[in-house]
Amino acid sequence: MDHAHNDRRKVLLTGASGTLGFNILSKLAADGRFLVVAPLRNLGWSGIRQFADRVKFMELDLSDTVHTAQIFERASPEIVVHCAASGLRPPRASWFDLMEFNVVSTMRLFQMNCRLDKPSHFIYLSTGLAYREQTRPLREDDPLESLHPYGASKAAADLMLQAAAAEFNRRLTILRPFAFTGIHDGGGRLFPLILEATAQRRKLNLTAGTQVRDFCAVNDIASAVIRVIESDEDSLIEKFNLGSGVEWPLRCVIEDVCRQLQLELDVSFGESRMHPFEPTYSVADISHVSEKLAWSPETNLAFAIWELARDIVPSLELKKPARYRADV
Image (tube, rainbow, N blue to C red):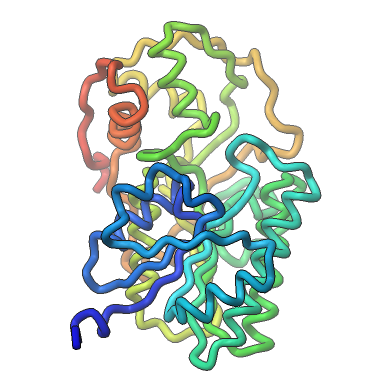
């Protein structure tokens, strides 16, 4: 019998084909302490090839109650990391489909977790967009109250999970990442659009860029998830903001990245409109996660975007920036 194999902790990871899920999967797959099961809506995902010998992939439609129950029975996970979500990458779901997937399917997954004889540690990836906007960095005890469709759907699941965890005495950790980018970003998101527009030498129309944001490398966010998995913290319900803790107007973020990469972007600020319910100020207070998990971001954002460029537009010649943040 392979005792080392049996000693590995079983992790069920949803959303492995997304930006954050892919980066979490990469870290789990490279770590010999874990057996990873990654249910996917589509087993035709090209990323399977690089993990095929280290991860067990299963086809799963989270809207199917019976199928979800069967996956849980087969996987019998000790840890569930729920990254799967709808609403940030095209094609955009309709408003009610968004709520169905992000709220109902999430609660269905937690329901299956409650049926296990040995309950799993349920780790839910919420979002910084769930908060009611404040004029200061957001803390974990700030109210969840957003009209942003994606933020509202994640806030609803966030609150429902907390109520269910308290009712059924199940360990729950909620992570609220703010803006991030890096390897495997795409689907019409900001920095892939910037890189592709530069490679194609076409003009890019953006908002005025006055909205204040907190941007982080996705690799750092994934590292925080691993810290949570490793943690022996026994609180029934725990919540952590994940971000850089640094506030910059979005235009300044873009200009700084372009400067570090020597990226010649033809951009017009103010030609596009913000989503009507997008916050003008969205910054994380990360003092709680720094204190409890000794986590803080280390990666220079420009380096994360340089790595992304090598992946999606390898023909684009960019200056390699410093790997680590100057304040680390």
